[in-house]
Amino acid sequence: MVLKHDGEEETAFLLSMSEGLSQLNFSSLDSTTGLDLLSKTIVISGLFTNCWATYAKKNTVTTQSKKWWNNKCRTVLETYKRTGEHSDWFSFHSTTRQAKQHFFDNKIAEIASTNK
Image (cartoon, rainbow, N blue to C red; front, side):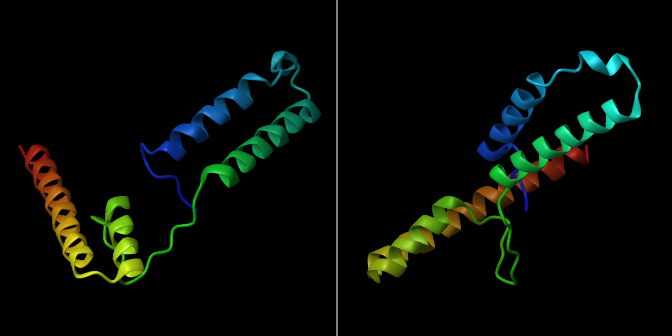
């Protein structure tokens, strides 16, 4: 299970965690009794588990997985598979080429800026 970095799921996860943590009463943590600390730890663990289960997505890596693949590529491919139209194939081909170009241009710029 993963959360896409800087994605909507990550933002929602962090907001949900901060809202859940803000609702907890930490005033009694002044006492260092093991039972109180253990109960707070269990509550925080449960909050994290619930938020993670809600917002994390299963990531299936296959031999066909490509880092440049994006949602637009997926949408256009689904359209082509549904219609089988020749024009949709060209749209898919064009979209994947643009996605590759954008991804590798960013990679080259990142490498160039880190190697200065």
